[in-house]
Amino acid sequence: MKAWLRQLFLFGIVGMIQVAIDSGVLIGLTRAGVDVAAANVCGRVAGALVGFLLNGKTTFPSLSGRRLHDGPLLRFILTWLALTAISTLLLVLLHEHVALEYVWLVKPIVEVCLAAVSFLVSKFWIYA
Image (cartoon, rainbow, N blue to C red):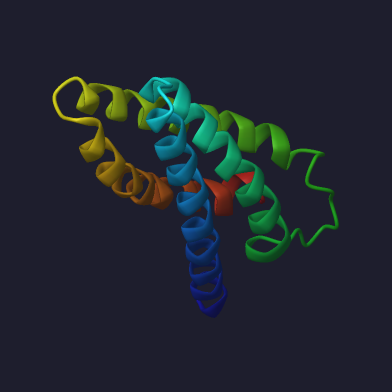
């Protein structure tokens, strides 16, 4: 059980870094006039690059010595695509009803909720 707590703690730290990068890119791009969907995808790409490497090296280090690009990368991409679609859909739907500033406020909340799913998928499938 201690390993789970350690992984959850590290995943949370990496996740905070990811959410900061992701949200910062979204805010910067939408302020510059980019639509919410495109800005969200760009933000999630930036966060994903950091998260995949940090989680692969620190949170879920491979016990078998596999390199991250062997199998985990494809599983990560598939998971990322699904979670990005959910995140983008939620933010676009929200933006149809509220001002952009509210989208900026809700973005980190959406990502934290998706992080719970991401942790379980990462632990038991991506980096397993």
